[in-house]
Length: 522
Image 1 (cartoon, rainbow, N blue to C red):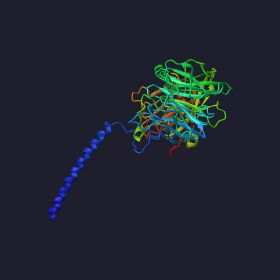
Image 2 (cartoon, one colour):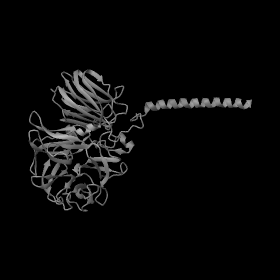
Image 3 (cartoon, rainbow, N blue to C red):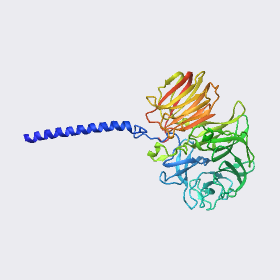
Image 4 (cartoon, helix red, strand yellow):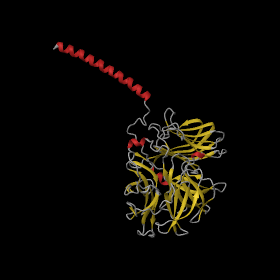
């Protein structure tokens, strides 16, 4: 027994020595791994990058929004969805409904893909045929949708729904608008033109927008076209009316366009002018832009279904992504890729030079999500001042004034060591506002789209800022939404600081208010 105890004691020593050696090896390996492996998107494996209060696809993939419509006391929203992403291709129309454009209920796929040889449904538009002009019955939902067709050309097909938009039937295997012999012929947008009492349709045709008219939604005649320059291939055209405070009513035509080669945005370009039912005549040659960020594409505008005055304002939303890096997102690890901007209220205004422009503001109903508010009546900044407030989903609003300062703004989603952050600011001498995401995780690996810029008056001495921050996005509204920036960002969970800064002089931040927003998924 004593001999056994001595032997066991020696064996224990050997095991302990071996365990210690292995432990040392593991420590050295872990230290090497920490120094050489790329950083994780979050130190918390349970952290979700699903946006707290922006619309996100339930699973797989989404891109272009289709113009929502108000029907039977709900907003009906269709969007391009790919259930086979990332392994397979092909989009279909998925359906969601909402009573307030904040909370959404998923209704499943409404227009399926690959039902016949004409392939998958792309973008288009849907209307309510109140008077049965198409012959499917009163209040039928009628959609005209681009499909690649059996012959490989982009052509327009009609689908209709008699169950309040839950499912759509294909009218026929033949297109209602055959391809006229051009490469790009897509994204039909239907409106009812009251004066001529006809349906009008806009078509994206390369660098041109084609106009068509119809009495029955099945037979269409070309009327005119609007040609653009230096804006790339146009997509998702739009046409609507708005009224200013002085009573003037103007037509607005918009398109998703790429002006980056000219130093302009890759978002929603628009022109203000007049439309006689067949021809659009712009008041200005150069387009204006509804957003200056990198991630506000495929934008659509739509009527306020609950307002009697349809010309006072509209709503707008867009896909928050960019085809340059569309698949580069940490949400893929959670099985989805696709987010929309917040729904915005848009209005037509006039500036000091009597020029028209459109403003954008977050929809007021977003306030129902506010769970707490922190305020700072006045903060004087000459250098940097870090606030006590932290967060990853909130609305920040403030008035800023300066005199000689050269760079003024706010750092958001800042790390404790202040090395990681998103900068929103103004450079008066260089005459632009900006959003810079270079110092945080973001989708543009080439780093050629890290700072969005919008022109400003170099003599400007003040600004009003409203910023929406969510898990993977920042949306900035300057001077009541005259200028907006929308950008994707992927900060670490722990990066939640807020710092005010002013370089080259003093700045005053007044009425700083941070309203924390709770999740629509709770």
